[in-house]
Image (cartoon, rainbow, N blue to C red; front, side, top):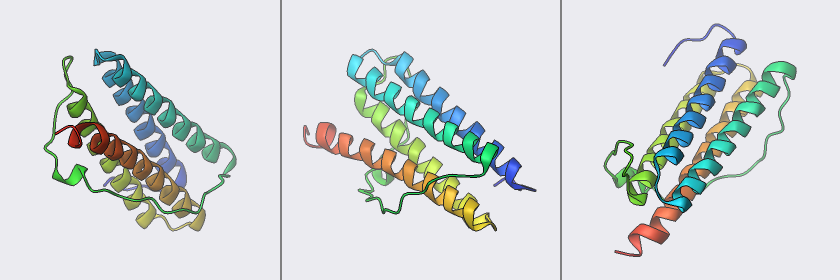
Length: 151
């Protein structure tokens, strides 16, 4: 993982990662032919935009409200093969791709939290890791409901 010299560098990195997630979900939405799939990915792009806005707020005023909750993990993503985004991607492949992306984001924020010395910064990254974990869980539930139950 990249080494950071100060909180500004950490926040800039996290902001860039959230923008990359926005771009990722917008790309998936654009490539999806199914309207429901497009809608799901647009909603996640909007959620990632909110994460970016929260990080920008923290960077500007140093404040952030943190919820206190735990998120379940169905661990479905751990047993699926990696897929690449394509124009003719199935809904199953899109869900797998999204689960893997959210899992990677969770790991990134968890590692950033481990490296943070400031308790407020640590709490911020723990919160962001939990947000990404919630996204992964939502995709896993969707996968379980619409892919696993159909087979």
